[in-house]
Image 1 (cartoon, rainbow, N blue to C red):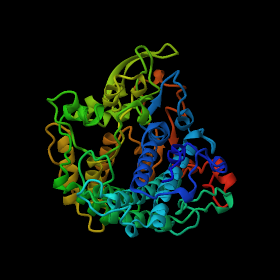
Image 2: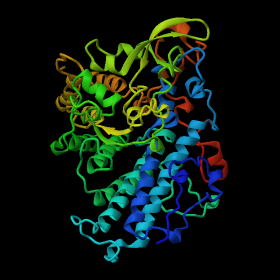
Image 3: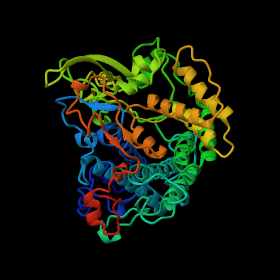
Image 4: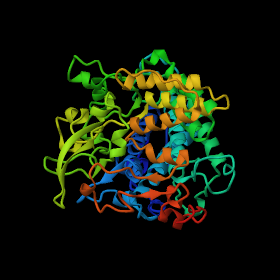
Length: 530
């Protein structure tokens, strides 16, 4: 059997520009030594998940859009990490743009490798190598190949949709078929990185169709219905992504139907956290505190968690910019007063997501401020790696969570043609009852009020998870940065920092295609204004 040499660098998008793709990477896999056995499919599948892990954690994929938005202020003397995103003085060469674009294209490439490899291998025609004996150890070859194929279709859909969220305008009937607004992607794996073969951008309609077509195919091969904290793609993950995609496409009926399929799956044993201690377990310990303290049962809000167990496979740290690195230091970014004021005093999230810290800045200003503590310094990965410093602020990425399904259902029911406020209110109230002690259900008589509450709830629930900028774009809103907790603690207060006010029509509400990509691929049209 020939070995697989597809490098992890390709999978996680470390080759972030097309210029770099012109050079054949070390250990690159020729297509003639592709997927020939169940073990080779397993190896390719593992690389696929490693690629996904790179796309759901860290500064570029998660923190950059939150720092760019309205919920955080940079502190005086901060490290300037993501400073160009915060100040909105970024360029087409800003690192976050290249990292995200390259990461998603790397994920697409790895998915294509499996999809094309499966077509070439024809496992169904090779029962000697791929026996179909699901329940007999050693005879699950076909099942292994199918699992890799289903995951590959899902990951490709996830990556194409990711490109749409960052680099394309919000979908509408008027722009759906306009040229060069959608994503650029290959649907076949190739070892020939010839710029002339790179595709241009599709329309939004074509791009969304490809996402849904890939999810249709994933449904044919993914077999697990759903289970809380699943380490692998399940049918519920497909429903969750469909719901997210449909909400962005303004297909509200599909959005609430897909979200409800997840919410109503009783066999998966998902459950919303309903106390501060459960939220601590869910976030500080990634739902796994029971491994260290038997009085905890674990929590089950996450549909899909990318598990790590050692320093060799840690996800990128997400919490490091929001908390002091050590005693006496200051965080890079702190929440705005406006964000903190969104939380009711009885909201369990207020005491779990935030912690008070005494700070003294480089300018001599001092105070006590609330810091985002959702991705705390000493979490479950820190414990699992024997308190290794490299695991500080690192948490297992939760790719999909149950709260998102409740809030999608609420928003979609309110916006669907029938404007079913009763069902919309049910999902919103059911969710808020779990988050706020003593919460009493609200009766809504108009969609506008309910939708305003959903927007606030998304701001509260998803803080620090990379949703905010995408939500603002989807709402057709600009970015008006919130009032600081303490203005003199902030870095260079002024119009491009604390008082930032970006109109919804500003061209920068759309990320640019990285400069190197446009220079190498002459078919790739840059977004307006750059």
